[in-house]
Length: 308
Ligand code: AMP
Image (cartoon, rainbow, N blue to C red):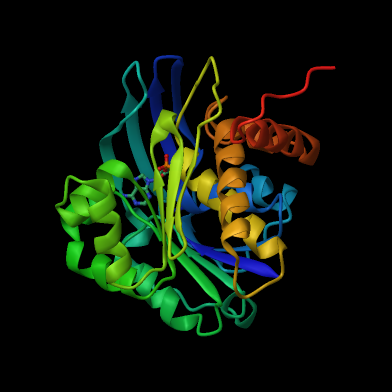
């Protein structure tokens, strides 16, 4: 069992109400891989520059993530994103995006990466996502994430890529922007009508919901009193979701399994935002994940928890 993920592997410069960080390890594929690695084997496809050193690589190795398909371009510079958040931390404001080595990246996947049962096209140029999708014929379940940057600059290509996957992961603002439809239920239908069976809609501090052929499911966000840095919440959500599904060792999933995966996504997202970048996930344990999963279970049933 393994999950292959392609997406940005980056340096992020961030400013939140709790402080700022310059050039810390980030990127959609990075956050996804680390989150998914708690459940299954992960192979990351991407490209970095010469500025990407042993310290950064060690974060992947420490989680057992396979970096065979992470190319390093001599003399090149890694993807760099600069973003900031206001007090409610609801929206990430992009101040600068430098694609650098991703501008000319033409991935040729290793045989092992092509054979993964689950494929996730994390946030990156949609043409690039599609080139990876085309190489992974055997993927039984595939998903995709994107963002306003690509919806505005490469909409047609993104729609074509969406047609080729089973599950789309976007936040509510992105769903509205992509579909040009203010009503979210109608927007969800629009997306599912062009191909994907499943739409996972992230709603920031309000949690996430899922539209499937069997209906609708909603999961809250964990009620944290302090969110230090929301960067990577969406990718960690996706990592928890797809990583958990892969751990089941199946090609198709029941509604119940998809719902459990959604809760695992919310659990992983709730940890990553507690600290900057993926610092928190680097020391996360399976026991902590299980503990918070149980708390989520209590939050999504009618009966109040039995106190000892
Ligand atoms: P999120 O999980 O939505 O908070 O995603 C955060 C990550 O997305 C950051 O670590 C950034 O490096 C990455 N990112 C920002 N802009 C882009 C972009 N245009 N394409 C790909 N990745 C991006």
